[in-house]
Structure formats: C-alpha cells, structure tokens
Length: 146
Image (cartoon, rainbow, N blue to C red; front, side):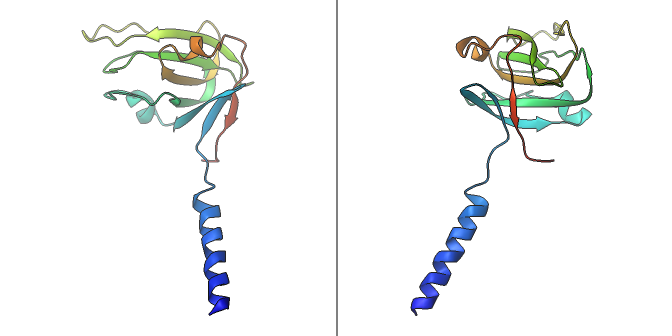
C-alpha cells in the first residue's frame, strides 16, 4: 500500500508539472507583463477585439505580421478604448496610439505608425501611460512556439 501512495504522489507531481506549470503567452516591459492572445491570420487580424465588452487589466492581443510595415488599425465594432503599441523586429516600441476610441458611426480613423513594425500590441486605454511605456521601450516576448 505504501508503494501506491508514492506512485500516486509522483503522478500528481507530473500532472501538475505539465498543467500547473503551463505559462501564458506574455509581452513584458521591465516590471509589467501583459498576457496576450496571439493573432496571426488575416481573419484573426480583421476580427481583433471586435465586440469584446471588456479586457482584463493585464491582458491584450498581440498581432504578428509576416513582414514589417506601417500596419494600420481601426476601431470598427470595437467596444472598448485601447492603447496600440507598434513594435519592430528588434522588439522595440516604435509608436504608441494612446486611447484609441470606438467609432460607433462607422467612420473610423485609421491609426498607423510613422515607422515600420512587425507586431502590434493592443491593451486597455491608459496602460502605456500608467506603466511609463514610451517609444524606444524594449518588449520581452515570452511566447510558446505556435
């Protein structure tokens, strides 16, 4: 009976090591991290955060493009104000659009960076200012292989 207890304990440790140790995909800036949903396909990019009524305080959406560019974003059918951070291939923030607001009348402004970026991170409006994130800040990607 004693051997079974050790076997059960070992199984629990292994199960917890696999499931409990699983980490979220994250983008970190010095001491603050954002748990991110990864967006890669054209369909996912088009949908983005549309129709979401809220976003957790340290959550966001990371758009990954196949090549750097001046990728434009709009707030069509997006219900919550957002900060948009464009990040280059060296993982440096190249531009921030603070407090992009929803466009309920269908005439949406298109937000574009002045420099090329490979990634765009969307977070709740005010996040960048609250945590002192500015152009030039380094983003540390902690992302599992897709």
